[in-house]
Image (cartoon, rainbow, N blue to C red; front, top):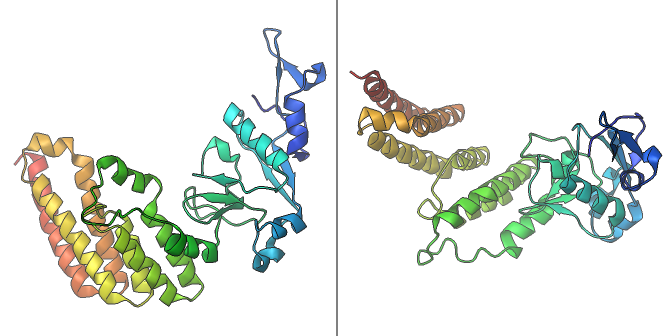
Length: 316
């Protein structure tokens, strides 16, 4: 369904749903072929908020009651909306804040551009009447640290995924990446650090490493973020251990890659450059926290590997 902006005024979602589902001639626009279609008459949407209800049913914690907006008003920036978007709009319009609405991911049509009203509580985002400033497309909304801490640390069950006797196949390993398992712990830890609760943040970071050891969930760029959080908590021993371990993993990968024939190296060039980028990030983070011995050692290692890489790719 296309957006035909006939008014700049914000319209209630219920009124928009009623309009786009109407069979009345005045609710339709005529195409060049003479066929008439329903359309969305504005880009500016409005959803009223029942403050008393969202506090009563726990949508918003009492400590955040002063942050509740009287109505959510936002601009829909797309030129059209598919069925999935219309369904979400219909749900929000008729839910009346009576039941929780969660989104598994952000940054797609189905969120209707409401990322600034999302609240991370686990592995999904809850739609709340609190406006927050998004950090980026994939880290939008706000973090409810109390709920997120309880869920990640106590409520959720992880099915023995870190048990040495439990086998994780490729599908399940990829699933941990899809749901951004480590990242959720990192987001919570960073929020706790911002609040000054580094002791609690360390417990969160410890739990993330405990659940996702390299032997079960291969270490990746998220380990750099965990190390960074450890550094901020003055847990240099833990941070340095992760930096050294990830550097050794990258070294082993690059050593293997660069031992192959030139044709193979060219074929996996992106993976090689990714490993070099990991090393550069490790150099940067360790240097920024004055761990010069570590940063110098990794820098020397990276220079040696890169020299071998340029030799191989130049054909000499």
